[in-house]
Structure formats: structure tokens, C-alpha cells
Amino acid sequence: MNAVNKLATQALSVDTETIETGTLATGGMASAYRKFIIKRVVLLAVLICTAVFSLLLDISTGPAVLGLGDILLGLWSPESVNSATQVIIWDVRLPYALMALVVGACLGLGGAEMQTVLNNPLASPFTLGIGSAATLGASLAIVFDLSWVGLSYTYLLPVMAFISAMAASLIIFLLSRTLGANVHTVVLFGIALMFGLNALVGLLQFVADAGALQQIVFWTMGSLARANMEKVTLVFCVLVICFIWSLSHVWAMTSLRAGEEQAKSSGVNVQRVRLVVLLRVSLITAAALAFVGEIGFIGLIGPHIARMLLGEDHRFFLPGSAIAGAILLSLSSIVSKALIPGVILPVGIVTAIVGIPLFISLIMTRGRESVS
Image (cartoon, rainbow, N blue to C red; front, side, top):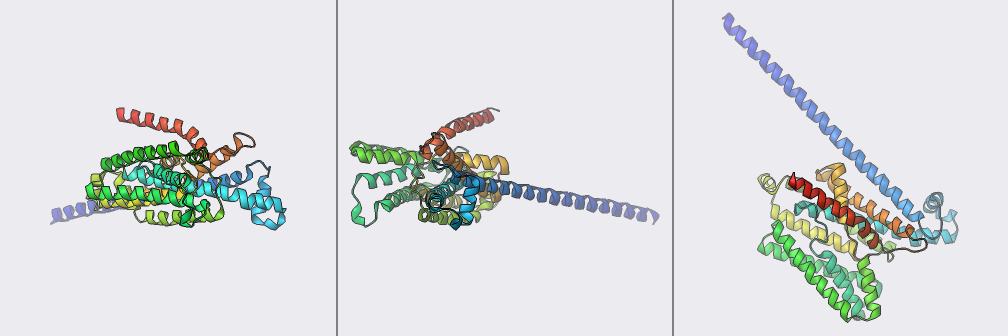
């Protein structure tokens, strides 16, 4: 009997130790998870503050010298500054600076989703030829007289760019749905479409007169000069809708980053998620490019910055990519106005100058990782 009691006491001791160890382990995991969340929330807050500072700096940059104090006073209390300063801040610089933020956010968010669903860190919203399609639509509006549709030229150009970009997206969407939405199929469709659309743009440039040719070239450079508050509001509304839509797929996309087979084993319909994301990226990219023309590399670089800071958890990665894209384009806007005094360069030129060396470094880094 004593032996039985002794064994029972030992078993109870072992069970107690196991429970205590499990409790400690669970508590440690909970503490680590809280630190994980807090760190990323703080990083997102830092990115938001950086974006706000970049916005103010962008507004203060330009031919007319305005200090940061004048900008803050003019934004907070417009009646406290003279009429000329009011016009510069509210009618000229604020729409320009806000357009840089919202377009950069659109491209950053689109790039993050593209890199996830295509499982390719070098993917961007231009991978599927959406940028080329927008250029084709704008070129058609420039070369041919479409005034019979009843729209002013100010809105005819972006509407044609938007329609063409969405048409290209619909073609890829339908082909992918019919023949399968695996990564290689979608990318090959996009590359083929991009080359075909570029050929059509080249044909339009060949037949265009000198004035139309100059406008097409200016479009392909990308510029924020056509911005106004109405256009900013339209792009911002599309951004908000697509961002909320993206949040409904954060767990599926986070699972997809662990591998397609892993995502399928977790119950994710990979093909459906991929098609929905491609449609969403097409919408947000078309809206962004419709008013500013082609602006490259933001959708490629922004997500990489967010990934380095926030990791692959898409609850933080997606908003981080949007904010990083907004900061990059805002800083590019500042450089475009400050690089040559008195001259505002097309912002697409600045993003290309900065983006090309970063793109090459990404390729080299990826190559070293593949070798190792």
C-alpha cells in the first residue's frame, strides 16, 4: 500500500511540474506576442509620422520660399496669411503633395499584394502590363479626337487610361480563370500583354503629330502637375476601398507566403485568392495611374522597405507597404522640385533614377540568396 501511495505521489508531482512548465511556456509566448504587436504598431506610427513630415516638407518646397511655420499657419488658419500664400498652399502645393501620398500608397499596396500572390519579390503593379495599358489609353485620347464623348480633355485622358488599364486586367483575369491561375501562367500573360501594348503605343507615336507625340512622351514620364483636390479625392476613395478589401484577405495572404502547398493545407483557396488580388491590384493601379501617368519602381521598392521593418505578417505588411510607397513618392516629389532650382522635373524621372540602382541591388541580393 505504501508503494502505491509513493507512486501516486510521484505521478502527481510530475503532472504538477508539467502544468507549471506549460503555464510558463504559454505565458512566455503571450508576452513575446505582445512585444511583437507593440513593436510593429510603433513602427507603423513612425512611418505615419514620417509621411506627415514629408507631406509638410513637400508643401514647403517650391519656387516661392515658404517656411514650415508659414505652411502650418496657412493650413491651420488660412485667413491668417495673405491671399497669394493661400493660393500657393491650398490650390497649388497641397493637391500636388497629397496626390504624391495617395498615388504612392496605391502603388505600394498594389506591389505588396503582387509580390505575395506571384511569390516573386521583383513583382510590381507593372508586371501584368497595367502601366502599359494605361499609357495606351492615354495615347489614344491624345492622338485621336474623342471630344464627341462629351468629356473635357482634362478628364478624357484619365478616363481612357483607366478604361484601358481595367480592360487589360480583365483580359488577364479571364485568361487566368479559363486556363488556370498558377503563378507562371499569370506572369507570362502579363509579359506578353505588356510587349503587345508597348508595340501599340509605339505605333501611335509613329503616326502622331509633333504636339501629340510630345504629350505622349510627357505622360510616360509621370507627373503630379495635373493634380487637384477633386482628383486626389477620387484616388483616395479607391485606395480606402481597396485597402479595406485587402484586409479581408490578410490571413490568406500571410499563409500564402509560407508556400502554396502550406496555404492549401490550411484551407485557403489559392486560385480564388490570386484572382481576387489581381483584380484588386488592377483597380488600384489603374486609379493611381489615371491622373499622373507612368510612375515606376514605387510598387517594387515600397514593399521591400515594409518587409524589412515589419516582416511578412500582412496585418502590418500591407499598411506598411502603402505608407512606405507614399513616403517614397512624396520624397521623390520633393527631389523633383529641388534638384534643379526653378524647374519641376517629372516625378517619374526621379523615381526611375532612384529605383534603378535599388532594383539592381535587389536582383543581386536575390541571386546571392539563391546561391547560398
